[in-house]
Length: 434
Image 1: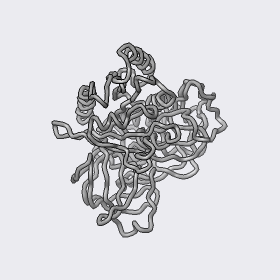
Image 2: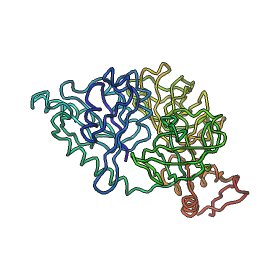
Image 3: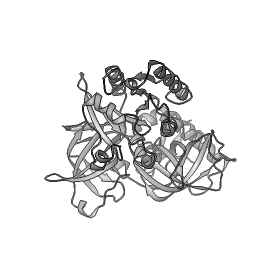
Image 4: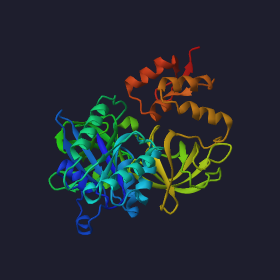
């Protein structure tokens, strides 16, 4: 399991991760010089059951929120860090809002630097934190008063996160392989290395993969996952892939790109999503507003417009059309964050519902009904609902691709919906059997 830290600058995220793992996640010379995190840092904690707990340590300064988003969007667990001397600060509030918009429910809150203040101050800030998180997705998160300097409370926090890792390890990992790339570098004697979080599926040494932006085919020559050499990496793990390929020298791989199983490959520049708008933002109208779209590790300019008959009100949610300035890889269920045109503040967040949105008819009533059916989590139920409102059938291969269904999941969706197929592979339509 990967845990992403969150919180205001100088609230002790790096020190706390080091206290748990023994690793200083600040790796850049500039970070050492300035005493603050600028880019993503990583650390790992081996657990007694053989698993490894990974940490993505994200920067807390508002200038580096783009880097923070690259580290937090693909994880399932968050550690919100609040210093006892300062209490909740501006970036505490924005980071918490981001975690809430992403729907991250698993995690904990670390109340740090308790060695620097009185017990009454610890109790006061503890209550402020409890009130602050009570209306968010982290409302059930346990608050751990800790000191990275003395070690007080650190073992209890680590044990709690380890228990969460064991729960997540029991979850199913389906779909084809997808890795959101957040770092690219060359290692002498090995060649090209890319790192990131595995969003779905698994990768094995020797697997052939596709670079999302260029379509170049590469091979996984070696894998490091959770700080050790392995033969396979799975969903929810952070890994580094040593890749090779005939055309790799002509391909520029960047943060925000993906490595994919061929069945998941493809780019989109128009998609429909379910969005929730922060309560202090202006409504999202049907006319289109410039935004920055953060999805996976990518940051792409685009425009957002409400698909509803009316605008999406502050604090409300609704379906919206995203039109991007350049194509990216995106599939159903991918989480995203929107920031304003100047990239100075977070305004909304949500999930992709239809990555293959049609160019026309976005505001028709039937389109809203289709999106409501697509939004259903259970794939068999979603397909059944779509079939009920589609006499001409449903493009089944597009449905399966949008949801990243592997062969077993495809068979399951057909059986659960009782659909029948017609047409050639790749262009098959599903029809209701009733």
